Amino acid sequence: RAGRWKMLFQKKWVWTGVAALLLAMCLPVRLSTLAPVEVIARDPAVVTAPVEGVIAEVVVKPNTLVREGDVLFRYDDKNFRNQFDVAEKNLAVALTEYRKTSQGAFLDDETGGNLPVQATEVRLKEVERDYAWERLAQIDVTAPRDGLVIFGDPTDWVGRPVVVGERIMEVADPSQVELKIDLPVEDAMILQEGAEVDIFLDANPLKAIGARLVHASYHAEVLPTQVLAYRVKAALSEPGTPIRIGWQGTAKIYGQDVPLFFYLFRRPLTVVRQTVGF
Image 1 (cartoon, rainbow, N blue to C red):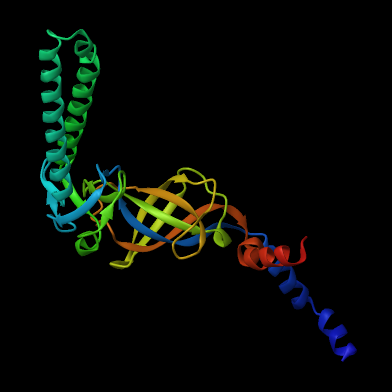
Image 2: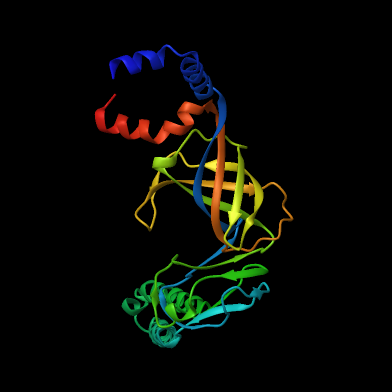
Protein backbone atom coordinates (compact mmCIF):
# COMPACT_ATOMS: atom_id res chain seq x y z
CA ARG A 1 0.00 0.00 0.00
CA ALA A 2 2.89 2.38 0.79
CA GLY A 3 4.24 1.74 -2.68
CA ARG A 4 0.93 2.53 -4.28
CA TRP A 5 0.68 5.84 -2.43
CA LYS A 6 4.27 6.65 -3.46
CA MET A 7 3.52 5.94 -7.10
CA LEU A 8 0.31 7.98 -6.89
CA PHE A 9 2.08 11.08 -5.58
CA GLN A 10 4.77 10.75 -8.24
CA LYS A 11 2.19 11.34 -10.97
CA LYS A 12 1.99 14.89 -12.31
CA TRP A 13 -1.79 15.00 -12.65
CA VAL A 14 -2.15 14.46 -8.90
CA TRP A 15 -0.02 17.46 -8.06
CA THR A 16 -1.73 19.44 -10.78
CA GLY A 17 -5.13 18.65 -9.23
CA VAL A 18 -3.92 19.59 -5.76
CA ALA A 19 -2.51 22.87 -7.06
CA ALA A 20 -5.72 23.62 -8.90
CA LEU A 21 -7.76 22.89 -5.75
CA LEU A 22 -5.57 25.17 -3.65
CA LEU A 23 -5.81 27.87 -6.28
CA ALA A 24 -9.59 27.50 -6.42
CA MET A 25 -9.82 27.86 -2.63
CA CYS A 26 -8.10 31.24 -2.97
CA LEU A 27 -10.53 32.57 -5.56
CA PRO A 28 -12.58 35.54 -4.27
CA VAL A 29 -16.32 34.97 -3.96
CA ARG A 30 -19.06 37.16 -2.57
CA LEU A 31 -20.09 36.29 0.97
CA SER A 32 -23.84 36.02 1.55
CA THR A 33 -26.26 34.83 4.19
CA LEU A 34 -29.97 34.00 4.38
CA ALA A 35 -32.48 35.29 6.92
CA PRO A 36 -36.28 35.55 7.27
CA VAL A 37 -37.82 38.83 6.11
CA GLU A 38 -41.19 40.55 6.56
CA VAL A 39 -42.72 43.52 4.75
CA ILE A 40 -43.68 46.19 7.30
CA ALA A 41 -45.01 49.74 7.15
CA ARG A 42 -42.58 52.63 7.12
CA ASP A 43 -43.20 55.38 9.68
CA PRO A 44 -46.68 54.19 10.75
CA ALA A 45 -48.87 56.18 13.14
CA VAL A 46 -49.07 54.08 16.30
CA VAL A 47 -52.46 54.08 18.03
CA THR A 48 -52.09 53.59 21.79
CA ALA A 49 -54.56 53.52 24.66
CA PRO A 50 -55.17 57.16 25.72
CA VAL A 51 -56.71 56.19 29.09
CA GLU A 52 -56.93 53.16 31.30
CA GLY A 53 -60.10 51.15 30.82
CA VAL A 54 -61.85 48.26 29.09
CA ILE A 55 -62.34 48.18 25.33
CA ALA A 56 -66.01 47.62 24.52
CA GLU A 57 -65.95 47.56 20.71
CA VAL A 58 -63.50 47.55 17.82
CA VAL A 59 -65.28 49.47 15.07
CA VAL A 60 -62.92 48.83 12.14
CA LYS A 61 -61.70 45.58 10.65
CA PRO A 62 -58.04 44.72 10.16
CA ASN A 63 -56.36 45.79 6.92
CA THR A 64 -59.03 48.31 5.95
CA LEU A 65 -58.56 51.89 4.77
CA VAL A 66 -59.72 54.66 7.10
CA ARG A 67 -59.86 58.44 7.00
CA GLU A 68 -58.47 60.79 9.61
CA GLY A 69 -61.03 61.15 12.40
CA ASP A 70 -62.79 57.82 11.82
CA VAL A 71 -63.56 55.92 15.04
CA LEU A 72 -61.26 52.92 15.45
CA PHE A 73 -62.46 51.54 18.79
CA ARG A 74 -64.30 52.71 21.88
CA TYR A 75 -64.12 52.08 25.60
CA ASP A 76 -66.81 50.86 27.96
CA ASP A 77 -68.11 54.23 29.20
CA LYS A 78 -69.90 53.14 32.41
CA ASN A 79 -67.03 53.94 34.77
CA PHE A 80 -66.17 57.16 32.94
CA ARG A 81 -69.76 58.44 33.11
CA ASN A 82 -70.09 57.48 36.78
CA GLN A 83 -66.86 59.28 37.62
CA PHE A 84 -68.05 62.37 35.76
CA ASP A 85 -71.43 62.33 37.54
CA VAL A 86 -69.76 61.99 40.95
CA ALA A 87 -67.33 64.81 40.12
CA GLU A 88 -70.21 67.09 39.11
CA LYS A 89 -72.12 66.35 42.32
CA ASN A 90 -69.01 66.97 44.43
CA LEU A 91 -68.55 70.30 42.66
CA ALA A 92 -72.18 71.22 43.32
CA VAL A 93 -71.75 70.43 47.04
CA ALA A 94 -68.56 72.50 47.19
CA LEU A 95 -70.30 75.46 45.52
CA THR A 96 -73.19 75.25 47.98
CA GLU A 97 -70.80 75.26 50.94
CA TYR A 98 -68.92 78.21 49.45
CA ARG A 99 -72.16 80.23 49.01
CA LYS A 100 -73.21 79.52 52.59
CA THR A 101 -69.81 80.57 53.87
CA SER A 102 -69.79 83.75 51.79
CA GLN A 103 -73.27 84.71 53.06
CA GLY A 104 -72.30 84.05 56.65
CA ALA A 105 -69.15 86.11 56.31
CA PHE A 106 -71.23 89.33 56.53
CA LEU A 107 -72.44 88.34 60.02
CA ASP A 108 -69.47 86.47 61.47
CA ASP A 109 -65.77 87.26 60.97
CA GLU A 110 -64.73 83.73 61.92
CA THR A 111 -66.98 82.32 59.19
CA GLY A 112 -65.43 84.73 56.68
CA GLY A 113 -62.00 83.34 57.50
CA ASN A 114 -63.02 80.02 55.94
CA LEU A 115 -63.73 81.60 52.54
CA PRO A 116 -60.21 80.98 51.09
CA VAL A 117 -60.40 77.34 52.13
CA GLN A 118 -63.83 76.95 50.54
CA ALA A 119 -62.67 78.68 47.33
CA THR A 120 -59.69 76.31 47.08
CA GLU A 121 -62.04 73.37 47.58
CA VAL A 122 -64.25 74.61 44.74
CA ARG A 123 -61.29 74.96 42.39
CA LEU A 124 -60.13 71.44 43.28
CA LYS A 125 -63.57 70.00 42.52
CA GLU A 126 -63.62 71.89 39.21
CA VAL A 127 -60.30 70.33 38.23
CA GLU A 128 -61.60 66.88 39.13
CA ARG A 129 -64.76 67.51 37.08
CA ASP A 130 -62.75 68.69 34.08
CA TYR A 131 -60.44 65.68 34.32
CA ALA A 132 -63.42 63.31 34.43
CA TRP A 133 -64.89 65.07 31.39
CA GLU A 134 -61.61 64.72 29.45
CA ARG A 135 -61.55 60.98 30.19
CA LEU A 136 -65.19 60.68 29.12
CA ALA A 137 -64.42 62.53 25.87
CA GLN A 138 -61.73 59.96 25.03
CA ILE A 139 -63.93 56.87 24.98
CA ASP A 140 -63.99 57.04 21.16
CA VAL A 141 -60.45 56.66 19.77
CA THR A 142 -60.12 58.02 16.22
CA ALA A 143 -57.61 57.56 13.42
CA PRO A 144 -54.74 60.09 13.56
CA ARG A 145 -54.25 60.02 9.76
CA ASP A 146 -55.48 58.46 6.53
CA GLY A 147 -54.18 54.96 5.84
CA LEU A 148 -54.43 51.24 6.37
CA VAL A 149 -55.34 49.89 9.81
CA ILE A 150 -52.95 47.15 10.92
CA PHE A 151 -53.69 44.94 13.95
CA GLY A 152 -54.61 41.37 14.84
CA ASP A 153 -57.91 39.70 15.64
CA PRO A 154 -60.51 42.24 16.93
CA THR A 155 -61.97 39.68 19.34
CA ASP A 156 -58.67 39.65 21.21
CA TRP A 157 -59.28 43.26 22.28
CA VAL A 158 -63.02 43.30 23.06
CA GLY A 159 -63.50 43.16 26.82
CA ARG A 160 -59.78 43.44 27.46
CA PRO A 161 -58.51 46.00 30.01
CA VAL A 162 -55.70 48.21 28.70
CA VAL A 163 -53.31 50.63 30.36
CA VAL A 164 -52.27 54.08 29.21
CA GLY A 165 -49.81 53.90 26.34
CA GLU A 166 -50.45 50.26 25.45
CA ARG A 167 -49.92 49.66 21.72
CA ILE A 168 -53.16 48.52 20.05
CA MET A 169 -52.92 49.13 16.29
CA GLU A 170 -51.14 51.09 13.56
CA VAL A 171 -52.34 53.32 10.74
CA ALA A 172 -49.94 53.31 7.80
CA ASP A 173 -49.66 54.32 4.17
CA PRO A 174 -49.82 51.02 2.20
CA SER A 175 -47.49 52.45 -0.45
CA GLN A 176 -44.74 53.26 2.07
CA VAL A 177 -43.12 49.98 3.11
CA GLU A 178 -39.77 48.66 4.29
CA LEU A 179 -38.26 45.25 4.94
CA LYS A 180 -37.56 43.86 8.41
CA ILE A 181 -34.90 41.13 8.46
CA ASP A 182 -34.09 39.01 11.52
CA LEU A 183 -30.50 37.87 11.03
CA PRO A 184 -29.57 35.01 13.44
CA VAL A 185 -26.32 35.49 15.31
CA GLU A 186 -24.93 32.22 13.98
CA ASP A 187 -25.33 33.50 10.40
CA ALA A 188 -24.12 37.04 11.09
CA MET A 189 -21.45 38.69 9.00
CA ILE A 190 -20.03 42.19 8.54
CA LEU A 191 -22.91 44.34 7.30
CA GLN A 192 -22.40 47.66 5.57
CA GLU A 193 -24.98 50.35 4.88
CA GLY A 194 -26.11 50.16 1.28
CA ALA A 195 -25.30 46.45 0.95
CA GLU A 196 -27.23 44.62 -1.74
CA VAL A 197 -30.15 42.43 -0.65
CA ASP A 198 -32.29 40.05 -2.69
CA ILE A 199 -35.80 39.37 -1.38
CA PHE A 200 -37.67 36.15 -2.20
CA LEU A 201 -41.23 36.48 -0.92
CA ASP A 202 -43.40 33.42 -0.27
CA ALA A 203 -46.14 34.97 -2.40
CA ASN A 204 -43.80 35.03 -5.42
CA PRO A 205 -40.74 32.86 -4.67
CA LEU A 206 -39.50 32.73 -8.28
CA LYS A 207 -38.91 36.48 -8.58
CA ALA A 208 -36.16 38.26 -6.66
CA ILE A 209 -36.87 41.81 -5.46
CA GLY A 210 -33.89 44.13 -5.16
CA ALA A 211 -33.29 46.07 -1.96
CA ARG A 212 -30.58 47.96 -0.09
CA LEU A 213 -29.59 47.64 3.56
CA VAL A 214 -30.29 50.84 5.49
CA HIS A 215 -29.88 49.86 9.16
CA ALA A 216 -28.50 47.04 11.30
CA SER A 217 -28.73 46.90 15.08
CA TYR A 218 -25.52 46.76 17.11
CA HIS A 219 -26.98 44.43 19.73
CA ALA A 220 -28.76 41.15 19.17
CA GLU A 221 -32.25 40.63 20.57
CA VAL A 222 -34.17 37.53 21.60
CA LEU A 223 -37.06 37.07 19.18
CA PRO A 224 -40.44 35.57 20.17
CA THR A 225 -39.18 32.34 18.60
CA GLN A 226 -36.37 32.29 21.21
CA VAL A 227 -33.74 32.95 18.54
CA LEU A 228 -30.97 35.47 19.18
CA ALA A 229 -30.82 37.72 16.11
CA TYR A 230 -29.86 41.15 14.83
CA ARG A 231 -32.61 43.46 13.59
CA VAL A 232 -31.86 44.59 10.04
CA LYS A 233 -33.92 46.94 7.87
CA ALA A 234 -33.75 47.33 4.12
CA ALA A 235 -35.42 49.59 1.57
CA LEU A 236 -36.64 48.62 -1.88
CA SER A 237 -34.35 49.56 -4.73
CA GLU A 238 -37.45 50.36 -6.81
CA PRO A 239 -40.07 52.03 -4.56
CA GLY A 240 -42.92 51.22 -6.95
CA THR A 241 -42.54 47.44 -6.52
CA PRO A 242 -46.03 45.94 -5.90
CA ILE A 243 -45.74 44.22 -2.52
CA ARG A 244 -48.09 44.09 0.44
CA ILE A 245 -47.59 44.79 4.13
CA GLY A 246 -47.41 41.53 6.05
CA TRP A 247 -45.83 39.40 3.31
CA GLN A 248 -42.96 37.22 4.45
CA GLY A 249 -40.13 35.38 2.78
CA THR A 250 -36.36 34.98 2.71
CA ALA A 251 -33.71 37.66 2.32
CA LYS A 252 -30.26 37.04 0.86
CA ILE A 253 -27.82 39.63 2.16
CA TYR A 254 -24.55 40.12 0.31
CA GLY A 255 -21.32 41.08 2.03
CA GLN A 256 -17.68 41.57 1.10
CA ASP A 257 -15.53 39.32 -1.11
CA VAL A 258 -13.82 36.44 0.73
CA PRO A 259 -11.75 33.41 -0.36
CA LEU A 260 -13.74 30.38 -1.46
CA PHE A 261 -12.22 28.39 1.42
CA PHE A 262 -13.69 30.82 3.97
CA TYR A 263 -17.04 30.82 2.16
CA LEU A 264 -17.29 27.01 2.28
CA PHE A 265 -15.89 26.43 5.77
CA ARG A 266 -17.10 29.53 7.63
CA ARG A 267 -19.58 27.63 9.78
CA PRO A 268 -17.29 24.65 10.55
CA LEU A 269 -14.51 27.05 11.53
CA THR A 270 -16.93 28.92 13.81
CA VAL A 271 -18.01 25.69 15.51
CA VAL A 272 -14.39 24.58 15.96
CA ARG A 273 -13.40 27.92 17.40
CA GLN A 274 -16.30 27.95 19.86
CA THR A 275 -15.59 24.35 20.85
CA VAL A 276 -11.79 24.27 21.04
CA GLY A 277 -11.13 27.91 21.78
CA PHE A 278 -8.57 28.85 19.13
